[in-house]
Amino acid sequence: MLEDLLLTEKRHLWHPFTPMREWCAPGHEPLLLVSGRGCVLTDQHGRTYLDGNSSIWTNIHGHGHPTITAAIQAQLGKVAHTSFLGFSHEPAIRLAERLVDFFPGRPLSRVFYSDDGSTAIECAVRMALQFWKQNGAPERTTLLCFDRAYHGDTLGAASLGGIPLFKGSGNDFGYATLRIPDLEALQHLPDEQVGRLAAVVIEPLIQGSAGMRPWPAGMLSRLQRWCRERDVFLILDEVMTGFGRTGSMFACQREGVVPDFLCLAKGLTGGYLPLAATLTTERVFEGFDGAGRAFYYGHSYTASQLGCAAALGSLRVFEEEQTLAHLPEKIEKMSQRLARLAELPQVREVRQCGLIAGIEIGPYPLEDLRGAKTCLAARRYGLLTRPIADTLVLMPPLSVTLEELTRMTEALSLAIQECPLPEEKA
Image 1 (tube, rainbow, N blue to C red):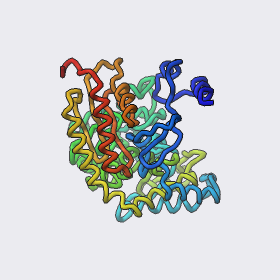
Image 2: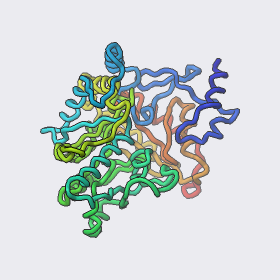
Image 3: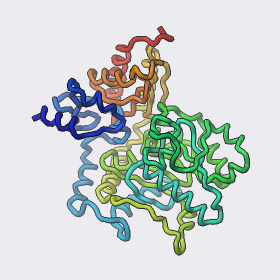
């Protein structure tokens, strides 16, 4: 039965970010994940692994959490999904109230739901562009982005990205963008270019798909000040960094920043169901008031009742288990363990922000796929994660225990030590 299942898998499925020739090769047995509890996942042979990247950066409180499961089951007993176009429902209303309350005074007073991180970004960008077009500044059509940024894979979101590998056909599509390397470059932009900016888009505190690269301390608050002085919208992509990953509920709160648009997904539901939210201000909302000004954008599963219920369950866990209060000890433990990894001759650099870490090995030739091979080796030691090129990602669920953190880093250490030394460090 298992053999037939795997054969069907290879005949019919197409996986994201995966070289499918190697995947479908006769000697390759795909890893099927069949169950999970806490930070532990179990495969088709009953082997267990620690979830070292939170199931691609989504899981917050561990798998099979009873509070979130109960919230989903309770909603399922009522209705699974209803249209949000011309209708509403209590889970969406309750969740919106919870989200806007995370910022004192509710400066982000409006919540627009969508499906995932890419669509959360698309909503923010389209709102910003339409706002300026119908409120006296139609020349503001350019979006300022940063080198090595990643904001999703839909056409518009991909055009904001600064990593060629994720662009597919190149950057000859999507929004009009202006790309800069860092905050210093802002000071040298001509007034003519600044006058055409609709918004600045950034991953706050740390760039994820760039290889987990933190921004300098204070950069975000300085960027906000620059935007405020020039009345340029600030869009924060907290798809990865939101919901405790950096040590606070949202990364922007670590520098006291409130953006014009806050984009959320991944951990919004605790990693249980697809759901995204774009929060914005009353000023932006009022800019769409009037005949012919509505925001004509939406999805069939916008504000999924099950997704909203899962998100409310996740926020309940944050409160009941005091999740944020336990993070400093875990972050410190991770720092101690990462310091040991940094001593390995194969490790070039270790980067950390909260419970997010990137361990860069190499340099190796790109075709060597050393990062991928190291993560495969880590499986033998009971750890699942994925690399970004030659950067190994460690981003456990917030529910991870200190003992599990130790086991995760020990598995990475053993896997890394199986690598030959790169020539320049040998």
